[in-house]
Length: 235
Image (cartoon, one colour):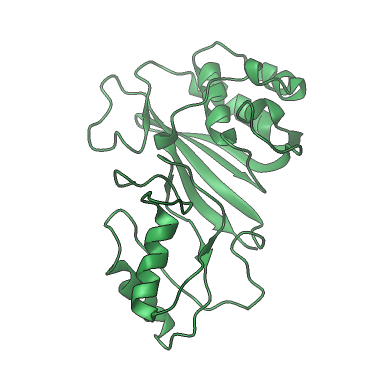
């Protein structure tokens, strides 16, 4: 994310992704655009698979839209593709599931190039234990213990369809696919799995932490820059 951008949502007098894309589309169509995303990403969180929709009367061919919009955008924002959809389609309300990835680099020195898209933890981690623990997050649960303290919203029940811990060289990828995520939920789950990896929490303690609904029993919230929205699914 380019320095200065404060996340997806449009805010007055602040650089943001929604506002920048709306401005770019407006410049090429001459219309005032209302861009609807699949959900917000907070400052520091990245996205490779965000989806958004808007209505337009423009006659620009749909396949030309990405090139035209990108020509007006900052280099930290890129439109990958565009397609026409049914009038009833809604980027947020039509979502079936999302896949997030949290990246941990556990090499001794980390990396300079990727420092803003992964979390550096320079100590050995028990990846097998992390894999065992991840399985307990799958299914429908009340994830109250894994949402930011003090956040609003009464319903904290969500379904995780798949929870994986993947090791590739010096990097550990924590991937979660679910029907929805609470505020900071992925980052807290990642922090809990990190505690499993350094033997502060046992894998078999995860169900008890979930059932407790107590935020203090879960791990810390890992930094935003290690998190990326990978894909949004509509089927």
